[in-house]
Length: 161
Image (cartoon, rainbow, N blue to C red; front, side, top):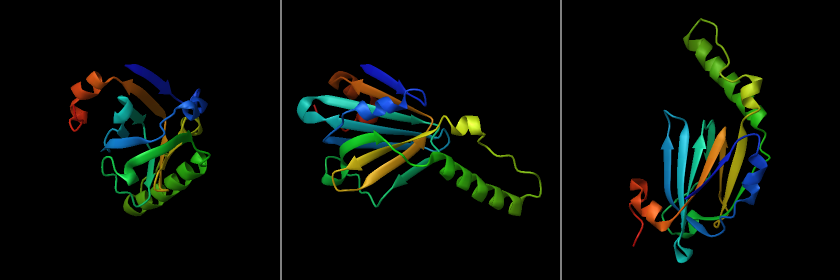
């Protein structure tokens, strides 16, 4: 098992991850923890991967039907996006503040200061059917699993022997 961790300091290295023609076999969203877990595999070559996104503030998906092994669930590429993270977070906070103030007369404090915003980055997956997935987060853990590790992991129960 090989693990690579990415944050704002080394985020450019995400562009070196090669996931061409891998199938999405698991897509878990943990709202309370602000985490997303994506399981990928290349069964033909016996390669299995897990991507863990930490402190997620945005997930954008276009009309996806991520059925396992299908055309729509096949990843062509993953790369660091040039998405304007700062603008997105500031707009999100503005909307949050307006909603909060309507319900509550007390002062609203912004959840994200500039230091925290500067640590966020956006990652995009391009899928074979032309769709894309965009995730804005603070960290990404990329794990290269052996078949044994993938089969041992309860979250990958649907892997065939």
